[in-house]
Length: 285
Image (cartoon, rainbow, N blue to C red; front, side, top):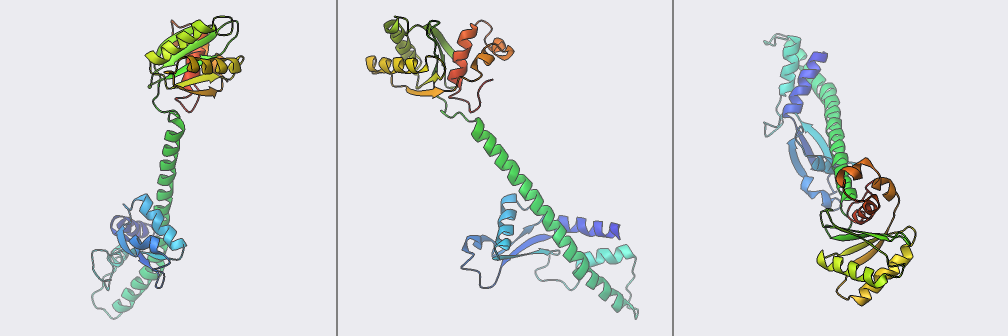
């Protein structure tokens, strides 16, 4: 019989329809499922979102689900094609002999009570499992896209890697993250005016919309410096944000950074990393 069951299973998967109907008296309560009050479609091709909606409607007591093994007929036929599969597999020859009516009755009962009920449960389970897997994959892809999306969008960004005696390292990246300018300024060692002119010039030249300031040593001093720049140069309207420096120094000295910026000083690579943290959800280390 395993071969017979497989033949019937294959036929149902290829031809049967998943049928949804509304439970009598639940029309108003289940209005959100109205699209499935009288719905049927091939079980093997039902999209995951519709399958899950129908199963949800059944779980809430609004819908009834069933398998129609013979959708080619407008009304339920007296004999399902699946019964013919069983009869053929068993090698029965029903030629009107006295026992043929009994044999036919046994096949019909076995099909309706045993085979159909079992395979209906099995195939619906397959549909549900497939729909849930697809829904999980869609959710995972959407979550991945969300997590990897640029939090600040495609906006030119200036990264400021704070420092006192060693100076503040500056890097500007465009909306795609491409490095377009670098500099080293010394706003905390008596060269604040010169540093302000340099920062304002870079902001205006590259239409900088965001300024990312590392949260390490001299972060607060660098933040105050940039606020002073905005007061001195009203055209500098970039939004300021403080970002984590964690891993920036590791990235700066990494092979990846050296491959991307072979001619750029290691200290300036850290500023690039800081600038890019407003563009990518995950840091570049």
